[in-house]
Image (cartoon, rainbow, N blue to C red; front, side):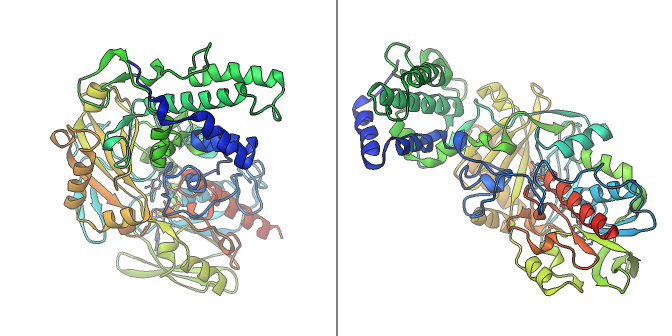
Length: 561
Ligand SMILES: Cc1cc2nc3c(=O)[nH]c(=O)nc-3n(C[C@H](O)[C@H](O)[C@H](O)COP(=O)(O)OP(=O)(O)OC[C@H]3O[C@@H](n4cnc5c(N)ncnc54)[C@H](O)[C@@H]3O)c2cc1C
């Protein structure tokens, strides 16, 4: 049965008010803002960039985190996405006879080492921890997560499909350099379902706090907006902008776009909305068309509307990918190709300039050692770097000191796949305006008995700090309590919680950069800087790679100056 309270909203009046006040092009913009905003807005390259428009859509950054909005191209320094220097752009053998010390063995450091070695440079990587990958990390049964004030052991079962990516977990099809390394190194990829129309959107401020199925919100939003625009056209409100042919074409398009009644141009609901009851356990009603949400109700809470469109963001659009069996398959593959250059458990303590180049003082096995080279690429996160003794220029040091980072955290549980069995959710993300922000359903091993569900991905400023400050058990308790608002069966299903707060991870002390780099994109004598935080794709591995390309390019220019 279709329920529509037509008295609730007089669209004609609504439309006319906007049109009268601001003109019809503004009216169109208003319609865009009502839910198609992200379709038409100029999205930034990274999640961070677009978060002002597409709040919370990211990897990464909540409204509180980001007042930052950058321009579209994936650029570093003066390079645009088309012009970014890349392997093949640097003269062959240009590094012969030259040496580079790379600080940090994350994706930026490993990319630098791999490419510089191909150019003939003598390369050394110093890495503080005992593993390659940095933030590219996967947690499996028996792994220990050491934070500054706590230690947890992962209790998942030992299946190869039972893993948790606490940092990077998805790859955009647009991240061409990362994907080309996967191809080159033989990293097997599979689809990552990012946007799932069967997943839920939950706001404590809307729909009486009841989770809504994303497909219903999406269908009703399109339907209502299409009807509104059709009404405007049919009432000749847009005649100044549109020819008769335009009007016909748009009306024809709107019928399909919004599933409108082809005769009346009214939105009367649609099978696109799915069946009522999917959000509950086992109570689906397949014979009754789901009630239509009025536009007012949809717009009453901006949270719901924003989340339904998060995958319009350039970095979140389908298709998305993930390495089979965990993101660290990429780190391992890189490492296999550069093992000979890497010294692990080598904690950099001082970064010094010499007359000829650089000198790095580091600690390994309790000994203070040093190493000299012509150049250094420093990929150490600014959060850590600011406390390392150095000879940096005051401008470089200032930018490092003031570099802002997100405090993101995640928690994962093992569970029988109730989301598949009871809710038809196969991969994807449910959203909530509670602190946990997101629940991620596994895209791997679909249809199997158990899976690893990400019970929170928090990046909002306050929420992330609160989560970081909690003990592992407090995080488990709060994630279960909040998750139960989305899935009533949650508490009885999820077990073996394991969390990671990046602000508390030694040698990371933060999740991803938020500030805009400037001085750090320039060399400080023979010291060059790289790392995701310096790219316009902050919070993405592709950004780390692009930052490495930038540093290599700057070294190349210096070598050939
Ligand atoms: C929560 C979260 C979600 C993310 N989601 C995604 C995603 O879905 N997709 C995606 O592509 N990217 C994602 N990212 C971003 C991605 O993880 C990063 O962009 C990338 O891994 C950063 O690589 P990097 O080399 O710049 O830095 P890092 O990986 O941090 O490498 C720096 C290295 O320096 C080392 N180091 C630090 N101090 C010292 C010292 N004193 N001496 C020696 N070594 C030191 C560290 O141990 C580390 O290994 C996410 C990140 C986080 C935190």
